[in-house]
Image 1: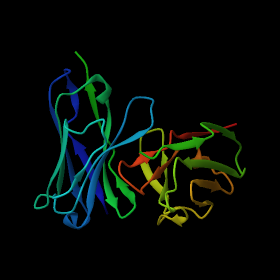
Image 2 (image 1 turned 90 degrees about the horizontal axis):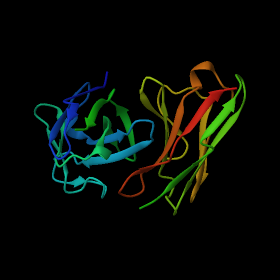
Image 3 (image 1 turned 120 degrees about the horizontal axis):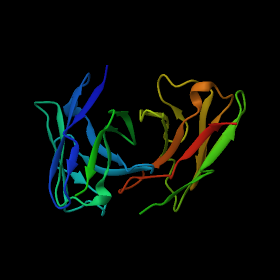
Image 4 (image 1 turned 135 degrees about the vertical axis):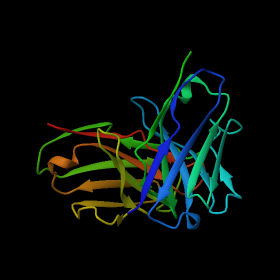
Length: 117
Length: 107
């Protein structure tokens, strides 16, 4: 059974950093692109980042480019999201997702990040 | 960036009713259109991928169609567990983008 379990969320002050983790199991992690998708309170879904199988290619929307970094450790079947220079508009639930060819086929339960002073 | 416009944003419906949700892309996306369901507890699962392919385990009352810029999700006969949020998403190009969502509510 595919499982994606996020951790590392919490309350952080504006301008500070936070690193999210996603532990994957139930599939060969190194064979799949992975992604982060977020959802601000009472809002829709927003794609945040995608990483290739080896980690050599990463993709971001302009809203987080230069501030967020997606990475992975295939030996540990783990995905990460380093978030720097956090803003109040980054407050959201962050979901880890398997980015299969053309769609997100498995999602974690999400982890909440609150950016507030 | 490709903008995805979903309609309606809210859809009151009754058990057993047939409903359709629409999604329009700001440019052609060559059938790279997916549908997701989100339950009130936040759980998200894919329903349809590449316009019309049913995700494994999803009931056959769900179907998708469309081409070019216009796509739709149809639920043939609503069951109690179908009342949830629905999102379309294009996977044609980066940045990947989602529609604003449709809340399917019990009438």
